Length: 331
Image (cartoon, helix red, strand yellow):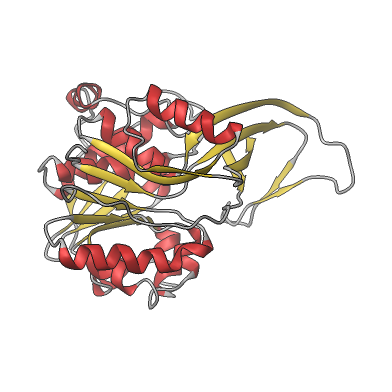
């Protein structure tokens, strides 16, 4: 068993991207809170369907970290079906270790449907139930990266917390998924307390904290109060915000070279790239800058992984970045 710099934990799936054409989008007066509308009981035409295998928050993070030069593995669960084999084949094509991907006899591998309309998407998700368990490491990893898992994973989080209790040199990056947020900050308290880095978007931070505040500084402080030593909150076109508990910074989006094709995985790219560069020893604002670059690249492609960059490619984008692509201190 090899030493790993970065071990990502979470559910894996195949995403089927269905590009719609005969739909309507209704938004409020601020062009927010949008809803996708289709005629009920109708036959709805679509343009195309594209399958993207071995994705999900944590697999996306593993691919990002591997492409950035970290020795990386994925802890995940699949069924013994064709979908599971396809995911394994894709992970191996990426060069990722699959020694911690457990195949369960008689189980189904996750399969999600992504309804694409223009650059936005709505994802239909279903997490299959697996008997989650941590593997035995011959050497504790440098970082664990924890993200989206199904609702049956609650005891597994306690197992992860117990591992971190006895391996304090292993750092945790926590990107809460849908069900982890639904479990509530009290039940997830050990995860936040162990987190070297917690990263989410603005709406997710409001949901986690039970807050209606739009004040980014207040949200950063609230996330720190849960225990995380470093916090990143992204805010769509407004860029991202980072705090180490003493200093905070705002970083704009990296300019899109062309209109976005698909925003799936943009948040994963920001989160995992930031964590990967912290693992490389960079400061938080420098790590987040590189996360914003990778996010820009991902939205130029369909799916969450095709656009993920190498460290050399990120350096090239930084070298030609506009002057205002910089970390600005927050009051």
